[in-house]
Image (tube, rainbow, N blue to C red):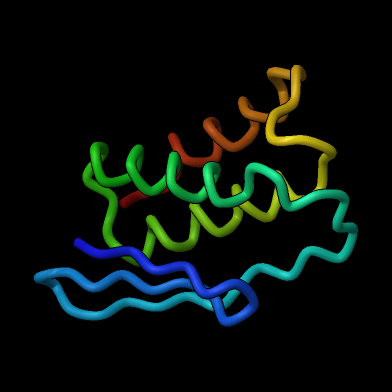
Amino acid sequence: MLIVTRGEAGAMIFSAQGIHSAESVEVTDLKDTVGAGDAFSAVSIFGRARGWTPDTILERASAFAAEICRIRGATIDDPGFYQDLRTQWAHVEV
């Protein structure tokens, strides 16, 4: 599996299952892009380990990277920030 991020052009996954692409997620209240790439990578790895489909990986990794762009710095101390996404991901079929 090869994952390519393309900034405003979205992201793509090339895998044995084919080529998958996703539009970028608009960030209207951009604060900082530091950590967005790491956030995308972390969710991609997590999704791969969980057996998510390529489309699900792209959707969730892009959404999480966009959320990171809405804060200053690469992380946030508020556990609720992360818990909300984890809860969403736990209740969605993959």
